[in-house]
Length: 409
Image 1 (cartoon, helix red, strand yellow):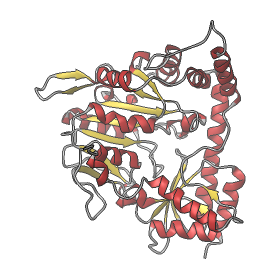
Image 2 (image 1 turned 120 degrees about the horizontal axis):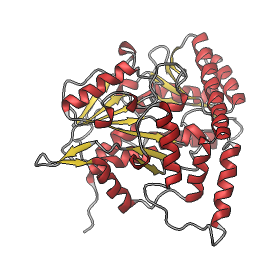
Image 3 (image 1 turned 90 degrees about the horizontal axis):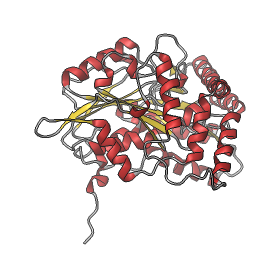
Image 4 (image 1 turned 90 degrees about the vertical axis):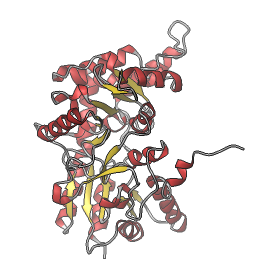
């Protein structure tokens, strides 16, 4: 008799974004004449920039010729891309990361979920609340938790509340974790962490022998001086942190798929006998066994964003989305909403009015304004009463959406 992984039965309802999709599909089916503006899931709308498209075509053309055809590539990623990432994303900024510490993948969502495979199930996981759902759900799937409690928290996870009272920056947990998920710029709140704040976490991880799983998928959206784009800007971080980055929002690769995971050579974890093991070797073994690498044309396209022209084009698209966020932030504040984020991140985090629940507000804006956002409670209990709007939309739709919100009853 085949047995299931019963940890999946602990998961509550469906994954957040499919549930949003279900409700939106039902509304559209019932109201085919309505124009629905989607600003919920963080999917981009602007096309790949010319430099990327040109390189993509070149990569495909190479696959059509015997002398340049590529079969299986290195599971860690082609050297030309890893070296470009190391140089332009780290070394030029004074951060000592080498190409051999970089792994190219098909998405940081995949990597932040899969990374737990190389750590034992007796590890205690700490996550923020609210938080990107993948961190909590994959912790459940991996067997590191008990059941979901009445308050929406899973038994066995250390939750770190992020509220307006603490500026959406978590306090150091009183219960000691082994693995700590941090995400800055933050999804969903749009907040960022200062160097002083990250130094506090790095020092804590060193003291507790913990590892920080640092999701920096939105680092390219940081506009303010002094805000770190990488945790490796912090002294000591290479001893205690894994960093995840994505081309999805940076360069519009949500449908093209390319990301990176950085695991420094000096990062170690321990077996049951207390013996240290290089984490990079474990991840390399996992990837070599379960992953055949990102396709050559995609990696060729990804490398193009590091050219002089590619950098300029990508920065223009990022500026476009940040202007969307500015419009949303200012429009919502003008009509009396408490608004957070949207300065160094493509997300605007909004407090609902009159103590309305997140899902009630979702239904209200969908039914009355034909607008889709993301209910804050879907990111965790501390997100109740908040709503996330994504700036990844066409400018015309952003302007129209804000006018619709102004007209809500």
